[in-house]
Image 1 (spheres, rainbow, N blue to C red):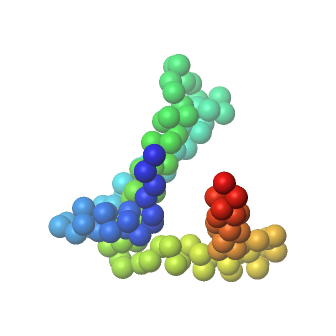
Image 2 (cartoon, rainbow, N blue to C red):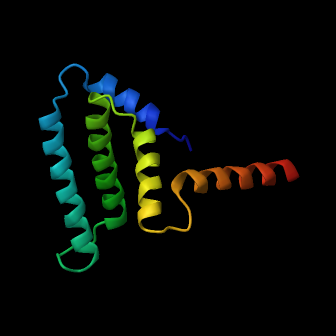
Length: 120
């Protein structure tokens, strides 16, 4: 299955919304999608009625929409979310005394994958 980087998604959404993607309207869509995530989670938890729906698929689709609109807003504002996410996680890792941070986790995971590949 194809994988997409944050930078590729940002470029795609910038291209997609550059002719009229307005922050405020994208933000309203984001809020709407967050509400839909809440509705699915309420159904999964039994707090709302569910009629034999595929809640797992619905949750994935609604979260994809949340990511779509959040990244679109970032792209239209010239933010490099890859950089922002890594730096914000570093600060949170220190503040909350995490065992590792996202950057180190990815580095370690890539090293492990490379060593497994080299052994084959």
